[in-house]
Structure formats: structure tokens, C-alpha cells
Image 1 (spheres, rainbow, N blue to C red):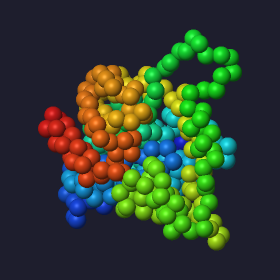
Image 2: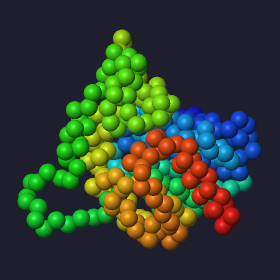
Image 3: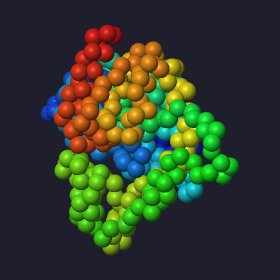
Length: 290
């Protein structure tokens, strides 16, 4: 499914099959939203463990099968608009759709719900991106912005491989993707590369991924959190990306938190069945409160 979002960008939305026959009787649709550099179908292995919803995964602009203009600056509010466009295209169900997001995906869901309150019945967010504003009085004029090391490293990322098998072998040999479940990594490679002559190329180009990180400074995710009135579960592991999230659930009118000390920032892709269980429990809790 392809729909029209802002700036004539057409996000791709993919069905994510769950247990056999589940979509036909689902009470709610679920929209899965990916992190920077990923795509919607990386959620497929987790969705296979999730019953009771009709699941779809979106490719945000510049990711997966959703193109972005050359030189695009990737304002984060536009990712929220992609989410709203996708929600409007989902099959109607008796209950409001639920949003499931990771990192950028979590932030995109928050921006969407803040822009159009009441869109979602509940949100399940694994380590959503959106650092609080920080003023550093010791910073020197012209000093490199926070995260610049990661941004520069992203720009140097290898984008071309002889074929998908070679890409899979490469990612399987080193962190962080060597910890991904095999079917998750296979989905990332299968749908994250485009055929390009006699080789394959990343669909999310390294320069575009770096620009998404660079635009985080103007994302405004932290400020809109109090405007998100639906139930929100913030799920986090113990990696450095999660440190700022401690206590962040208090910024939401209906926020709760869940902590997995043994998980990294990529928990949904290293422990998909466990986190599908977390999503199912959250949906039971929030549907009972409707």
C-alpha cells in the first residue's frame, strides 16, 4: 500500500502477518514505526508473535520503499505526518489504532499524536528518540554538536555490497546486528537493499541517515510529550541511549515505564517474542481501561 503524505512523498505501508487468520477478527489495527536507518518490515518477526491486531509497518520518508528528494533535510515533524497519513489508510476497526515504535519511530508516533490528539488508543514505545533541551555553558563557539561522531561515522557507512548474501554475512559478523535474531537480520537485508546493476545498495543512504540524526536537535519531541493524552508505555533497556529516559514517563498524562536490564537499544530485534509479550500485555491493560 502506498499513500500520499506531505511534500508529495508517498510512504509505503506493508502488512505484517501475525498468527494465522488473526487480522480478520482483530479489534484494532497496529502501526509499527521503525528507527533511523531501518524500515517497516524489520518488525515482521515480532509481529508474528502478536495476536489480536491487524499489523502494518510503515517505511518513513527516506527509508525502505519510501523515497525522499535529493538533499532533503528530514524535519522530524514530517515523519509524524507520514504516520498520520498511514493511519488514515489503515482498515477501520472497532477500536482506535495502536502505535508501536522504536527510537525515531517512537518519536514519530509522539509527534503524530500531539499534532492530532485522539489518533491512537495507546502507544508502546521502545526507547523513543527526543533528547531534552540541554544548555552547556562551557561549550566553545563553533564546537561540534552532540552526536557528531556518530553522524560522521554514519556518513562513512558502507552502502554497496556485491549481493544480499554478502551484506548478510557482513552484518552477521559484527555488532550490533550480529545480536539480531536471524529472521530479523534477514528481513533487514532483504527489504533494506535495492538491486543496483550487478550489486545491491542500501535504500536508506548513509547521508540521509546522518541528516536524520542531525535534524534531531530541532525535533521538539520532548516538548510535545505532555500533549500526548493517550496511554503511553516507555520501554527501555540499559544501554547509553536509554539513560535520559529514566523518569520520562512522568511527562505524559497517562505514562508508564517498563525496564529490561539485560536489553540494548535493539531489544525488539534481539528478543522479539519477549517484547511481543510486553505489547500484548499493554494492549490488554489499555483496552480494559477504554
